[in-house]
Image 1 (cartoon, rainbow, N blue to C red):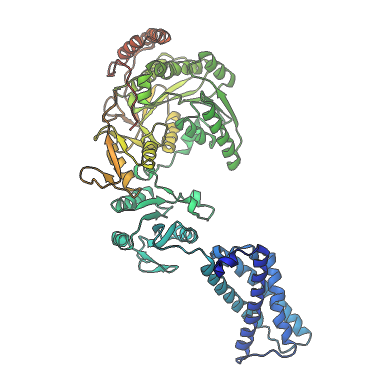
Image 2: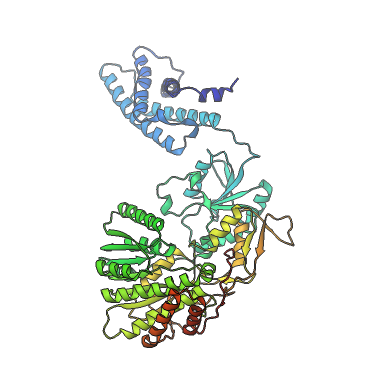
Length: 636
């Protein structure tokens, strides 16, 4: 036999609504009796026309509540929003009741005080609130306090309170309290749950056997979030977070909003506000071409470009799926932002000289962002011919087509691996930079195209990035693979990198190599350890054989550096932007470079790897290359 509460939950909805409306009618009558009793200061028994007043409560309340949708609510999940709706309904009911009482008095019912129109609704609202709360407590699913994730919320502000309400209906969480930095909140309680100080967190985690901590501080600066996360990292808990303020603009928080703590919260920096004039200079009202538009960097460039209201945005990529995805996303973004622009998706390869020339001549772009490149070091190391065809000759094709079409600005997306390269990918990108430097120097006097290169390091979340790989390895139970204990890398978020690229391109006068300020380099082993501990797990090593996740050192891959560099020389020149510097890089004149490029193209056409690498080594003498294709290893 089912328990009574479960039997009630099994009733059909019309039956539930009928029972609730009947119960509300009884509450209205009870509230009227209490109001009469309080008004006359004695236990009341209705006389004469007062019986009509008792009937007014149900006759007015039930239609109002029905009209305002109160009986469509699921009471066991109702919260503050439902009570606010009930208060509005009772306010309307009160106004109608006052009018009805005035009308009854006009008919000669003098023993009916008009103050009942205020007193009875207040008592009625109190009775409804108590009844709804009781029903919610009785019918809501019972959570086993020993089961599920035992949770603390870090942040006792509005986001934290909303989160607590969402957790109240989620069987997978048992909320145990809040942690907050505000001294005025600590020591108090929210909905019966205590608010602790951050210094109390380690003791509370141990005493209450806390398994998870949720960051509900969407308005905190990145620096403050980093401090909070670092303070929580020694604790044996799984740290999750809520989205930022923009994602919580609806005012509603659900369990589905909880997400894994992005490593961007640890490695990213507080963004520098963009210089709006720089962003708009080469974009607003212009025709813009982005090659590699479906890639991680190219797609983010497109998202930010479209917000600057270009006349036309031409998307060029060889990946059908990548091109389709970014095209659909941009169309949706236009609709959401109420913007208008012509978005043209074009399939093709930058290695196809005729296709590239046709596109530039047909659409006549004002600005070109050349993001198309093979950038995965092990893949290019194992496929040097394709890497050189795409990264060097593809860049030459697009640059020459841009020159002939009268493009105003040409921006190459380069990499820190182009500095003293130790692999084919890095050397190919350095040679691509040299191509543009030579073209810029050759055509300074008579060409309208300003060539500029923007060099930066790893971006978080891009294809081939270590962060998504570590997440996959964590989900699989490990191990996390790191190539060397001392390998370090620069990191930057994709949106910040794209925004700085757009601003750097606008500063170009021709031939510059701009370098983005990447901040402090991060040791990959430290990154792996952080990701393990922030998942509520422990690193398994010789000192902790009972840990959860192993970190395996696989050895440096051929061509891989321990430390990446952004500059070949020293003393970079500052620019008008605090995070954009100008490098001093030498180059080879076009007259000298062009014959070697022709020989390189012939070697690639003949699939002569040895000759192609020899030419590459001669053109980029600072490069240290492995002469034999390297086997692929797991990226780390």
